[in-house]
Length: 229
Image (tube, rainbow, N blue to C red):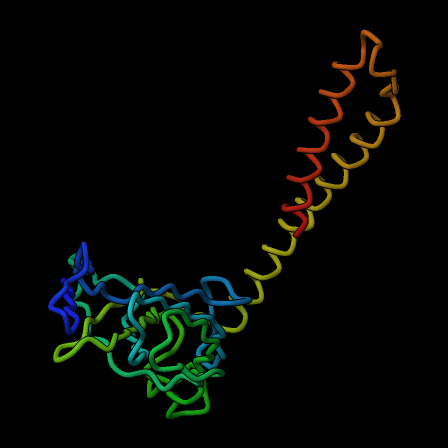
């Protein structure tokens, strides 16, 4: 409340009131997605991705973590202990603007930086075929004295041989070709249906039915476009 009194000792009819609402400082929100790859990679792959961050009062810092563990379950059937995450030397293609409330950073994790032996199948390499590679990202905001921290979901990829990856890519290519052929067939059928629809005047008794059919075909075209994309 602000009160002002003039030289004649006259205050205002109503003092000025200011209201401030106190809110909790929320932790950052992270969303990481790999780009252009599936769930299988080779031991010397470059893994591209994009990290989206959001914070209510401004971002402070961001970091990358990775973990490698065997993809083969032990013979005793027990779940093996998960190794800890460690810092990942990713290549950031953009710089985080400290204090920004939103950010979208592109990055690449080059697995060759982890290779001790040029042979991808060598046992000297931590990342090699028949292992699981997990990626995670951490972020801090600028709250003082203790910053809020948050983690992204863990993205786990299976490391396979080059031959296994090519086999999987051929399978996916075959499935996508078959899907595109189904889209093409539906497109041909839709064109035939459009050709059979009459264009009655607005006052004609068949006008509502023709309009409904065109709207149905329009929704189908929209769905087919998303599938093709």
